[in-house]
Each structure stands twice: as structure tokens, then as C-alpha cells.
Length: 292
Image (cartoon, rainbow, N blue to C red):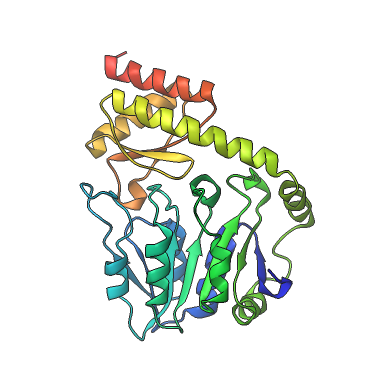
């Protein structure tokens, strides 16, 4: 990767907004999945562009609530300038296998910018996966967005980045604010990159605890969406029940994430914590089930 391919942002959120500001105006359109990161919608709206929202896969699919790439591709025409894909996806935790994703990118017009949001990548990598950065040699219209806010644990310092062709990076760097990333965040990011063993340990613990949580939540009679992130989307069957569970947990000092604003009112997103934190979450959920 060369310096001229990089664009730094005040978190990857900043990069996502910057992409919309650079490539979208009224009369243009962007495509994204029904249950995607809310910033895609906000950024597109702020630019006065059209949002084209592809229906997600149904809940009984082998990838429940996952991206339907055929549905997304069907929405692309000459007005579309951006396609947003998060892999793994937030808030569902769903993921796309690399061959299908690469085929999708190859099938898009070369003047459509594909934004591959890899905020949760570290939690999803498989031993036989290729680094998607290699795809930049094949696709000049690909922008890979990553962050230090998740596996690198620097969320409060706000630093993210994109890697793209020099031509695309040049456009982004002309549009971005000149002082958008502070020196403390940059110093911390460099230090974090130098401690890959800590990252590997954290990711390994997440994988173990995620599997345990999925199993234990299932034992409680709850339906979960299989996840490759550091969180699990849990189905409580109704919006009312999800809200009641959320309030119950809050009163006991356990914070989970309602996702009604994503169009998923019957679900709660639960972060994979430390072993002790996960035990507490499961204990409180059992207490709720017991009527305590």
C-alpha cells in the first residue's frame, strides 16, 4: 500500500460521510442493504441523493438477514455512484463469502464506487481468506474502509482510514477537512499496529466467547442471527418483548443495543464481552425468563 492510496478520517464514520460528499449530489443515487449501518442512510440523505435500499435475505434463509447481492445489483443503473457493503455487517453480524463478493464487484460498472466497509473485519477473517487489499490491483473503483475503533479498541480517539486507487484517494483528500485527525489518535494508532499479539488475543477470545454466547442464548430458547462480528443479534419475537427485556437489563446495569432504528424492533444487539460479563448477561436473561 502506498501513501497516496490512503485517506485518514475521524473514525471510519468520517470516511463514509466523506465518500458521500465526494461522489453524491442531487440526481445521483447510492445502493445499500436494508439492514445496513445507519450512517449510509444519513450520509446519502445529507447530500440530497437518492437511497436505493435492497431487501435483505429472509429470516429463514441460510444467511438470515444477510445481503442479497442480486437484489443490490438490480438497483444499479447510470444514476448510481456508490454501493455500500459492510462485511461483516452491522447490526446483523452477517457476512459475505469472498468469491461471491468479488464476483459482485466485478459485475458492477467501473464508474460505480464500491465502498467495502470492513470495520469488523478482524473478527471475521478465516484461515483461507485472501486480503481484500489485493483486490485493489483489479478494481480501481473499490474503496476499502477500516477502523481502529473495534478490534484495536481506540473508539474514543476516533481514527479510521480508507485505501483506494490514488485517483479516488486524491479526490477524497481534496474534499476532507484538513485537520480531521488529531495527533494523539495517530500516535495511538501507530502504537496499536505494533501490538498485533494483543489484537490476536482479543480476537481469539471474542471467537470463543461468541460461540459460547450463541450456544447459551439458544439454550434459553432465543433465536440468534449467526454472527462474524463482536456482537450477536437476538430475536425476542416482538418489539414489545425486546423493549421489556432491554429495560429489565438496564435496571440491572447491563447495557445492550436496541436496533429499532434499523427497522429491527424485535431484536436486541448484544456485544460479546469478557467471560465474566457474558456470564452476567446470561444470568440476567435467565432471571427475566424466570420472572425475577
